[in-house]
Image (tube, rainbow, N blue to C red; front, side, top):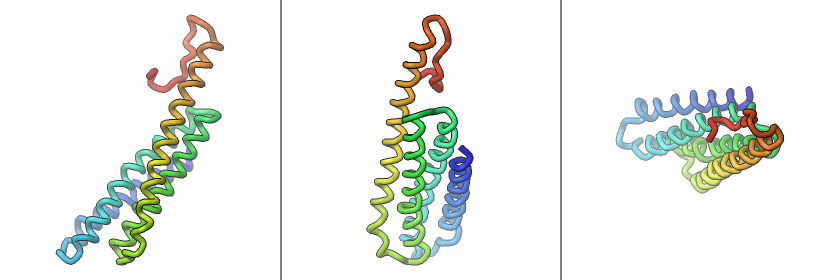
Length: 148
């Protein structure tokens, strides 16, 4: 949990920093494309920083296959951030436009993370249903977050 909390917080910090840089330092017309790349990278990084914070919470609330899927989601979000947002930042700040071919790989990593969280949700619900059956009728054996 601590790993993903720190990674999520660091990503949020970087996203805000890069967004501020794009908004305040790259205002000239010649920097328009670079500014757009950095803004898109910062937006995606911030969204996935929040997802990493959710991963931190879910790591402490899931077990077995669901927890493994949550971990896969965390690593996928981190890889997506490096390969998508990080490459957009490198393109915008250093002009390394040749790296642009890597950006879709980062997008695929983000998608893999969301798919892993979806799978974790399915596994967690199945485990909660098994737990309810093993506890018996009339008791509150539902450990499912949000009762949904």
